[in-house]
Length: 385
Image (cartoon, rainbow, N blue to C red):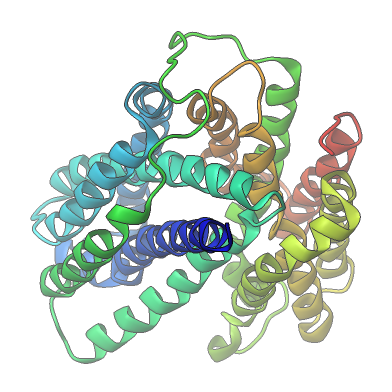
């Protein structure tokens, strides 16, 4: 009996490590690409407008993949889809370094976004299964490793740039690392997750619960996308820091976002999902308003740290709740929520640009604070504990 219990504990620990490593893989591939965007822009002689148009191809690929990912995961299982998607994601990465024109890069980025989000849905479905084995909240720690991979990929990219290594060879190194991770993890992934083999219709109608979760994710992703794309601009134009400090706000945001994900599971176990989501929205809105009302270096830095802490747990908690849907399989539920949520990444940053052009950047950030407050408002309307 004791040996059986030990085997169960070892198996679920191995599954958790395997899923964690694949979260790391997806984050590493994405960060590796992002770290070399300036070099690729220079190689292809793209101006800022041209680069902006090319970069739109990646979220387009992600959105195209979402309904397809739900069907594939539901029909064939998240393990098989994850392994194939992870390998494909790492294969497409070096192909990006082969692009000789903007249209080639755009096509490659559509495939990169497609494979990346296919892996994202599959690995989150695996995470839902592992969380069920543990019987407590552990989803945020998986997403925390994605953030750690982001830091790691950025550091490697900086090193490769300093060594003047072409993006193609840099990306090939990441591909080899990715294949190693897949080879080690593949035998420890979960083979069967609840209802995975009972594929619903592609056009299955989500209930109000899933729609609300999707809106919560969308509001959070709008805030995240704003921080990713506009935090440096805000510090340069509004806070008016010297050029060397323009990235301070982004660094502050990322530090609390990454660290917040490693304590979010403990806090969720103690306070519950609903209170965590309510608090997340409050932190996000408060942080943005601090930066808007006191646009000076220290207050804005603190405000951006609040935003990072606020958004850190939202998507992991929403994905975890969606994975427990009673009307859809985990893969379809995650794809449904992700489809709505990703609209925030797609339309949030351009919205900031339009509002800022019509008014100013502070007003645009105040509008995003309303999106942060909406996380709390929407969370109050659902039962998730």
